[in-house]
Length: 490
Image 1 (spheres, rainbow, N blue to C red):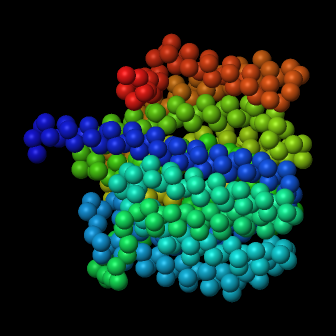
Image 2: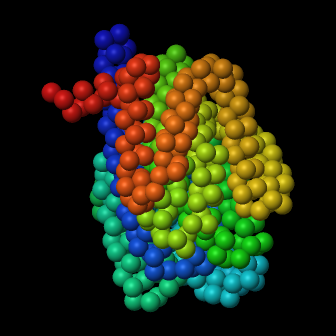
């Protein structure tokens, strides 16, 4: 391949990456915005206990979802040229595993209800569990769209499904169905999403189950499965502890705080996972270009995530008052702790792990997850002795430890380690935190409506952040400015 063709391919990949980032952001922001708005309406109708019970159910649904995909989807994306036999094999594998797990949930639902002291939970879990089978029908189609960076189609599918399922949930809540409205929302969203994936993608499974394909893909996927399962177990272990030790309403307050915190965090995190992994996989044979892509991706992502997390921490109280009313104010300290202790660095963790996956080091990803989660569980047991805020503090400590652990091994494999990452991260971190303190102290003794307070603090923080980025010539600011110029300004 000559130099001109190489440059042309790199430029094409760059354009597809930028387009993929934009559409992936549209998909996540649209999806989570719809969920956010519906959550505001539902939170005003339903009780914290309703959200707490659903939070208990989603523990098992999310763990089951990880087991069904089993990292096989990531293996398809990482493989340079998967065949139709590969896709069909994974499709039937996902479906079979989903059916088996659903049967296990049916048989164990009663025991789960006893564990959480919730009489209504078994029947709810049995009904919500059907989403596992619905989801399994669309996993491969979704991965094909991710591999080809067709995030425009993914955005349309997921936003449409989220819109109709949210409408169904709100109507059900007004009809007095209580927690069942949340059940209807989950089932409707899953069913519509898989249906649209089937009719909007050209791929359909063929009657093939190849042992060779499964063996090849599972070799890579098995380690990612174990790593993802450990990560999901750790995340849901937090809710298990709260649900077991504290009343359901306390889990409801924690769940509401986490859901609101995850709107910006998971928007960016999903963009990172969906776009950077296939792009990094394309660059796996050229470490110099891969390292530069990693650096620019990281700086660009934290430039958005850091100030958003800090600003949300500052405006947390008026935000909850405006959106959810006073009955949800106990969620505020949980929300602030999650933003600064967990959400701040999640983007960095995901980006580092995606690099390791893209170069085929799923074994290293697994070993890192085992080590980090052992530390994390120990910290959680220590933190829960001091209540839910103690547990959130433990999450924060573990998150900052993860940065150093992940960065060390990325440095060993790719050459972009902790020192280099800190050098690129610290300017944005310092600027964001400094402006957060500045905004807080200006408005701390003011008396105004929640809406006015949010608007004024956001305007001051945002305008000052952009101005200081220009003054100090923050590289990510220049990157976004160039993208805007090239894409939207003729």
